[in-house]
Length: 458
Picture 1 (cartoon, rainbow, N blue to C red):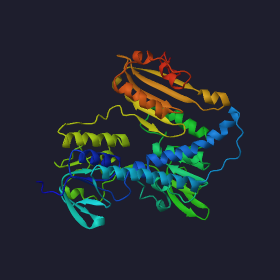
Picture 2: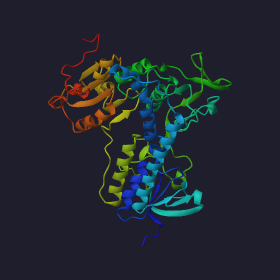
Picture 3: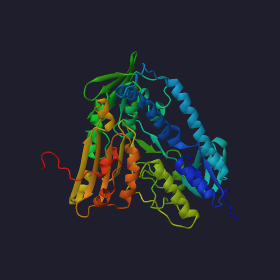
Picture 4: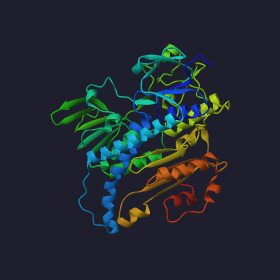
């Protein structure tokens, strides 16, 4: 008989924590999970899901504009911020409730409390003023938005967390950052009729993505009315009678109603008592783990964004499943982090999997590029200027497709299927043997026959 209260205690009931708790409990283990906020974590409560609802809402404005080109007469549309938020909150509450119900059905005990480690086997449940013990502990506390604490006036700015709960829709917003959260919220607010400025300190948005993707998306979002300011950052923020003034390194001042920072997220490890259990962190505050998500402490593991490997919900879920296979089913399993597809729900959206052109060329590897930029069929009909980018990065030696990058309508849907092929090591010849589906934008992916030669390189 175990001397511990639980066989497994999970800190954090987000996507990874919930999956691990449920699967472990189904093996007969005694499992508990602690969550100081709503069950569901960032993805359900203040991330992927509510953000996608906002994307859906904001996309209607473009649809109303294009409808006339297809023969529709549309009256002057209006948007009700309060009505949208009421509907969104109801759906998020429903989804969080499903997570709770699934945990209960699996026999997992839920502690609605913050959990802090007292040592490698002991946890203090702060909200319940009690301690519990566990044979094994899983850290799944995710990440948290970061703000530049040393910036004068930073108290007048918000993060993505607060963007979901603004009491009123602003007329003007300045969004700071060039990553996926920043460009997604820029598209959202622009689509909802907000005068939107995107400010980024770097030379171009979406650092880490293929350069063609970055350039194409920047041009498309500017064409849609978003003001993009690059190579610039804040020197101060000031509150005025007219709103919030951003003092910029360029010497310019920009007045808006809201300043939102989306400049990064940090592993949520502060105050967890990890030092009491001697859990090692890296210089970014992330929990250091091996290929099996195990920390330097023999009975403690960590999955998801708190480890800062690939910070995506499906990755956390797969890491959690691999953890249970390894620890509770005696089946050592590690999740393969190579060729994980990602989507940016910007407007237009991005889908990407595999290597960028720049990454593929590193080390002197010879590659072929297949690239197409075109107006989608829908846009050509109503006279729209939208353009789609599709790009394949191919190893010239063995014709294996190393990367696929799409910017345009339905890019996230297409990239999921492309990821399967690239994960399996498909060659360009095999790819092209797939018959096109017509009429679709996706058929362009299998009809690019000639390598692309950049201007000036032919």
